[in-house]
Structure formats: C-alpha cells, structure tokens
Amino acid sequence: MLLWGRLFRDVVEGLIERRFAGHHYYVIARTRYFDDLLQQRLTGGAEQLVILGAGYDSRPYRFADRLGGVQVFEVDHPATSTAKQARVRALIGEIPANVAYVPVDNLADKLLRCGYRTTRPTWGHKS
Image 1 (tube, rainbow, N blue to C red):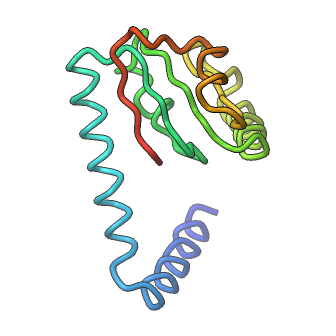
Image 2 (tube, one colour; image 1 turned 90 degrees about the horizontal axis):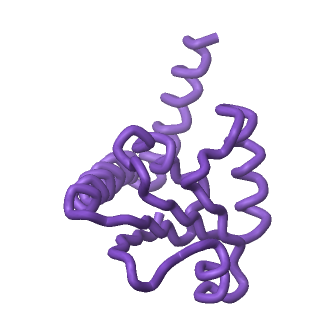
C-alpha cells in the first residue's frame, strides 16, 4: 500500500510540474519559510497564532511540542472548518485545547468570541 501511495504522489507531482513548472518546489520553500518564521515568532514571545484561510494547514499539530500554551485560532469558511475538524478528530482524536476553529463571517467579532485578546503579542499568517 505504501508503494502505491508513493507512486500516486509521484504521478500527481509530475502532472502538476508539467502544467506549472516549479510549483512543487515553490510549495516546499513556502512551507519552510512560514515554518521558520513561526519558530522565530514563538521564540520571540508570541502568545497567540492566527492562521487566516487555514484550510488544511497542519502547523498546530506539527508544532504542538513547540506551541506550549500558545492559543491557535484557525480562521476559515465554516464548511472548510467543519470538514477539517472531522478529519482531525478521525486522525488524532480530540482537538487540542489550545486550537480554536473560527468560522468566518465577521472576523474581529469571531476572534474575540473565541478568546482572542488584543492586548497579547500575536503573530498571524495566511496559509
């Protein structure tokens, strides 16, 4: 099964590269850039992380060991948010207590209702 997964990934990557040359490497570089930037902000004292258009961004889970008490706000369309929560629960069980899903209609109001504090150091990024 693992071999088929790798074969499928290679085929998809090849199709994307033929249509959009360099896209695969752009995505890798972009991910690394934001991962490094997040690490810098965490080291610098960020106490909250806002991910706009979170989609299936995995940083709250990949960085779980480094986030500590950092509150994470995943902002996205309600349908995307619901689908991601179901997927996360299926994969890891409980959604971590420091992760809040913020369905968007009025961003400022939603963030405040989910616990966002305007007085705390914050770093945000667009996935």
